[in-house]
Image (tube, rainbow, N blue to C red; front, side, top):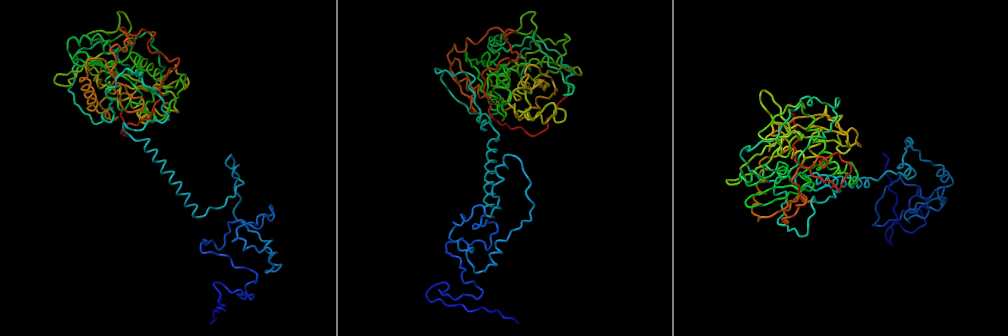
Length: 571
């Protein structure tokens, strides 16, 4: 059995390490090859590192690369002849063969800048650190998305928001109170069924052919320049004045104003409502030409709208365009054969012989307290008869201006993915759809018809087409978009109770342009008097197709709670 020879180990009596002697330590050990210098602070490296370049031989730079660290210089044997001439020849003829295929050529700016870089494999610890850094970046990105998409009234607004108040706050105005939207979320109040005090106007029948419209057989949106539309405020309404003189109620408003207050937590743009306390009565008014006469577009969207004044896709231009589309849509989907449903009184705002739009005004009264009643003017736009039953309809239109902003192309998705289109609109126009639903509930409409109207071309804001019309029951639709009627009336009751404690005078309720809250200002009695008109707007001053955009604030982001339920349209 062969044994293992350890050999002789010389003893160094003068210190650590091998003794200083000219005799070789080990018989096969070359005499001039030194031991590698070491220190207890040095890190142990690899026995053989094939990933490093040879620091002592670079044919392009000669011997300039020899100025390396002292620990590397111990391994420089180029000037040593201990291995004989054969060793030098073998070292010069040695080539490291790489069996990997050559890298495929890449094209682009990134490859051009990196193709001459030394692409050496990373060490294991460097790879781990790189993964940790990437994980931290991903975690930070998820946190930002989480905070940006939080639901509720206190969600952070869109960063690029740059918009102003709907009314100029004057220095002499006295701010009495400010109410955050978070205080509205837990309010609840139940009102009994309302009673109709008076119904005015005339309604035309709805044309059921529009229920069969698809993007493949679209209809051109017509213009109705001869029909007058009225946007009369509360105190300018002769019927409300008459009911106030008869002491029929304590609080007076319109469905437009009430829906704005009911859906205030979903609003992003600034708006204002004038409040007048006269004796023991309370009147909620709007300023002539205020934002309440227009329809917001992409108010709750994350995608910012252009800020340029002359851009057809600015916030103000789109609001005017949406109001114009709604007026024409509400008259086009009717059977215009002369048959109308008339009520007790005619249109209270029209002159004799004047052609007016199809609209019915229901003056309704709700009981808020034992000695407090609210009267509001509610509107319906059409009527249908089925099985000898008469049903009232509200008619509204959603408008598409550019598919790249919404992310959904209506012409491609309306037939196959109508639910996805509506879900996108609920995300981008949550406040507008909630206000339409609230108005339908206030008027006790049996059906609300939503039209999908799109531009003929994204850059043409004058010509539009109707792609589809879908009907929904207001109560079912309100449940799908989390619109709680008890909470709606709780907001109205709390604002009315607050205003009834004020002294006689005029006040303004203003939505803050940058924060989810409303403020109440006390204003002079003659404020806004020059802006009011006693007569309906003449035809040339009504909302027309937009020609030049005016100042408009940019939208901010707000996300509202919308359940992921399929909203089933009604026939």
